[in-house]
Length: 105
Ligand code: SF4
Ligand code: SF4
Image 1 (tube, rainbow, N blue to C red):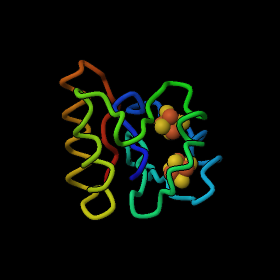
Image 2 (cartoon, rainbow, N blue to C red):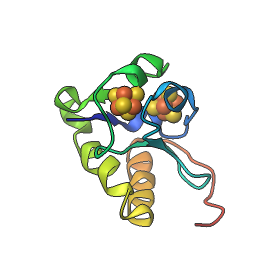
Image 3 (cartoon, rainbow, N blue to C red):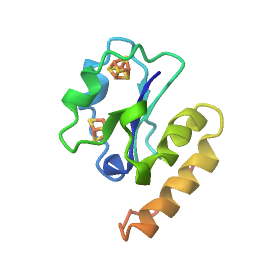
Image 4 (cartoon, rainbow, N blue to C red):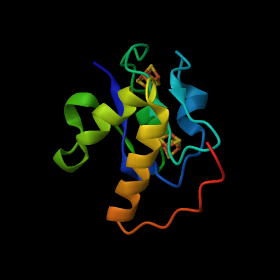
């Protein structure tokens, strides 16, 4: 099992969760609009969830129904970054959220 970053992180993307993760398994690159947890390395400690001020992180089994796609999105980022970035931008648009233009990937 793993913890999962969901849509509340889009456009926020601080580093609070990364700073407390004992496994250093939360990642984001400058072109990303959110952060991603590596399910292969997450040890289920829950520290990141407590550190996220916007409530973006859930245990995999507790991810709200409307956000279940993010279970796949987090995992997929570690192999298909470009496709995931595009999908996250689509989701932001669906949610009516404005994001700054992509500067390059
Ligand atoms: S649950 Fe623990 S190990 Fe997993 S991403 Fe969060 S802080 Fe890192
Ligand atoms: S603390 Fe929350 S908002 Fe900040 S990067 Fe982590 S998941 Fe995203």
